Amino acid sequence: MAQQYPHGHVETDSELEAFYRDLEAMSTTALWRVLTQQITDEPQPRAVPFLWKYRRIRPLVLRAGELVTPEQANRRVVVLVNPGLKSECYASSTLLANIQLVLPGEIAPAHRHSAAALRFIIEGNGGYTAVDGEKTVMRPGDLVLTPNWTWHDHGNPTDGPMIWQDGLDVPLVNALDASFFEPYPGMQQAYTRPVDLSTEQYRQGGLRPAWERWTKPYSPLLNYAWQQTREALERMSKGAPGTPWDGITMEYVNPHTGGPIMPTIGAHAQLLRAGEHTQAHRHTMDVVYQVVEGRGFTIINGVRFDWEPHDVFVIPKWAFHEHVNASATDAACLFSYNDQPVMQSLGLYREEELVENDGYQEVTGAFTPL
Ligand code: 1HN
Image (cartoon, rainbow, N blue to C red):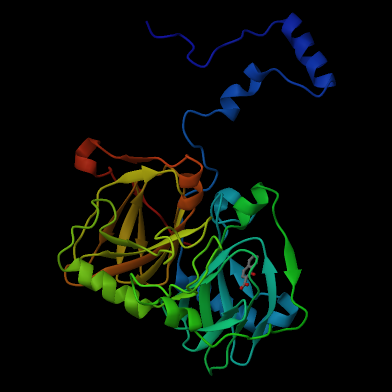
């Protein structure tokens, strides 16, 4: 027989009320009063599915360029705030997402912090990020890593603006009370290694320099160039099945381990073939997407989110989602990053496919972007 109260049930009376007051006076409480709040049957993210239109954000980013310098602001960044996480200004419960601008001739000063970051380049060609003594040159679609506690500064010696998305694990690091920050003594760090040395050393897929003693817990490759990523997606799209939920989806990996690029943030590049409509699933990871090419939509918990190049959207944990490439002739490419390495290494990762309706959600509405 099914239990009448599977979560337990205590009827309150005046004796219990007095007991609760006595507990409170000793800075204690009764677990049965808070249990269903603390132990929910399923994840209850405060973050909501959301999408930022790049063409609405871009003018604000450029306006920031007229109002503050990187010297003043440290980082000239517009933060993408999830409406469910307004007080914290986070994109999801574990990920911070920003759009950053570095104008011609500018330098964003060197510093390091225990939060890890990645950059995905949107506009501009030839700016750089320097990481622990090595500069890497950035082009649209490149994924650039600034792992935990690495010195990093940015510069733009070109004649056009450099704009990219920053993804950071700041919310996670703060939840764990593990934030440290240190400014570098000087605007730019000492550039002690050849430009793009790690790209030279590690771009050969499946081969790594055997003399390199790499013991750090993140990828030694600083820049995953879009050109190679796009070529890989194209090759795979010619015959590989991909997954039913994400199409041709490739994980960016640490060449030393084959595992995720950083211990707290993983990343994928994915290609949806012309007309592809994936099936719905959900998982215990937060994912922040950036559209690289093509047009389409993603249905998240029954709501349709239309996207076009450079739009950013977030899928919080345990939300059902499926992707649609709206073009009958052209591929669509998405970049995304996630907290899967954390969830996986802590034994908290789960996935579930939607079984009803052949794996497709019922669409109940469309998201109206700001
Ligand atoms: C940071 O260091 C950068 O280095 C960008 O470009 C955004 C947001 C929060 C904390 C540190 C950068 C950041 C950040």
